[in-house]
Image (cartoon, rainbow, N blue to C red; front, side, top):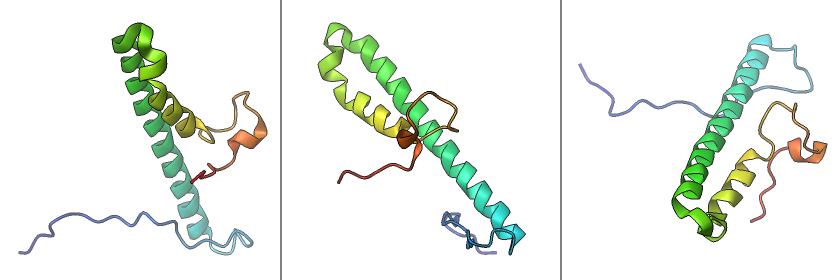
Length: 101
């Protein structure tokens, strides 16, 4: 019996035609699951960064504005466009993230 060294997952989005969503209902459901899974990954990433930021605020004390600035920027970038659209941010911030690079 031969074992694989590691398990590989297909993380690419499924083949789905948005112009004809009901043409292939299985692909539509797979695409919806893919979007939900990606959204949960973004939310959990933001939670991890928030915990690091909270720790940095506690450790650095009065110098937190200078020492934790990079974490604040990472947290703001991670939360932009994340969520289910029920918060009070402007509509343009709910879209996909724009790469400034």
